[in-house]
Length: 113
Image 1 (cartoon, rainbow, N blue to C red):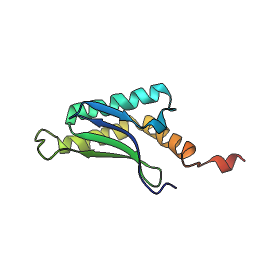
Image 2: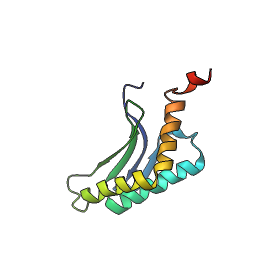
Image 3: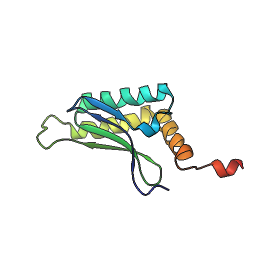
Image 4: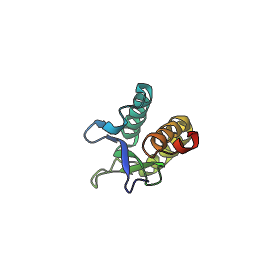
């Protein structure tokens, strides 16, 4: 297993930027597009910064943050939006997590041999 968190993507409402980790450029373009739309809409809706990352166990996690002087950041809305995405985008998130587990962690490869 990896000893550290691996960032998948980040959307920043302050800089109006989106970043997809270069290590994931082999994801199908449709998946990349869905991730971008999801993350950018999230930060446009609630503000702040959204980071999707894989923890040490290979689980996909959401992390939000905001600058201290951002009084418009919606902390409650952020938590609700994450829950909504975890339900509505379950197939996408599961597929990305499975991709990571197979291609980065090598899980499931021993079973086929």
